[in-house]
Amino acid sequence: MAHSRGFSINLAEKCVIVTGGNRGIGLAISQACARAGARVAIIYRSSKDAEKVAEGIAKDTGARCQAYQCDVSDSELVTKTFKKIDSEMGPVTGLVANAGVSVVKPALELTKDDFEKVYNVNVLGVFNAARAAAELWIKHKHQGGSIVITSSMSSRIINQLGTGKPLTQVFYNSSKAAVSNLVKGLAAEWAHNDIRVNAVCPGYVETDQTSGMDQKIRDYQAGHLPLGRFAKPHEMAPMALLLLSEHASYMTGQEYFVDGGQLVY
Ligand code: NDP
Image 1 (spheres, rainbow, N blue to C red):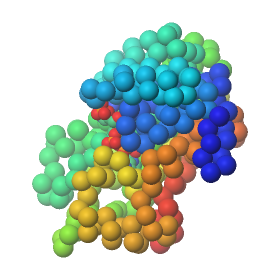
Image 2 (cartoon, rainbow, N blue to C red):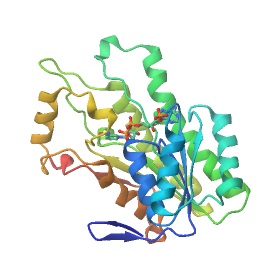
Image 3 (cartoon, rainbow, N blue to C red):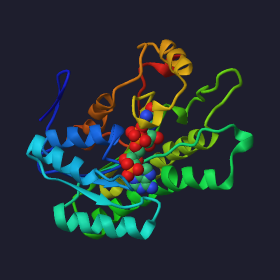
């Protein structure tokens, strides 16, 4: 059972794939899924220690946890890897499409390569993973499934990251808006297959993605959040676990903001 300030969800008998599950928010969700009794398949791209991370989760929780290397932007590889996971650890019952990347540059300096870097992971990679999971459930007649996509509060608002001049993340923000829309289309198309699709939209979370932020900007942003601080990665896990569980059986096509109140302003 997973416990976080009284929150408790049982995922025994579930098998969950978490893309980008070896660090940051994905790692916290992988750990929480394993604590809740699920078998967890972690997808990573190039990390050297992902297998050790998976072994550590298995040791700490007693749940089965394995790491699989796979670039989510490679559609064929994703399909192949998901089939492998399904036969080795499955049947797969849930997906957390969480892997994401960011490029922080002024808009005038952004290139086609920057666009592809961001969109190939944040949009195409999410779609590849969602489709590969849905194919497992539809073609192999598993009993439905739950897809949780890590979007962002920046699907709705633009964060100012510059000191002096305005600096945003044009490709990143727009990729997250695309993903939040993708959630609705996939939820509508797959609902009759008993597949639910939702997004968790984090606010600022203390991970490698935010570690490079200028300290002045970080203090300013934290100071303007109603809760007055960035989140810890584990604070994103309860919403993901809820959406993966049977308790969310009537929840689909939605975005759930876990943002310290950022969107109230
Ligand atoms: P991190 O930078 O800490 O981790 C990124 C993860 O994604 C790593 O596990 C990485 O694997 C994996 N990854 C990246 N590219 C690929 C790829 N092509 N194929 C497979 N895996 C890949 O990210 P966070 O934990 O901060 O973010 C997780 C998600 O949450 C992202 O979608 C991000 O946009 C979103 N988010 C984060 C916020 C924050 O403040 N941190 C705020 C709002 C949303 P590897 O280690 O092998 O490189």
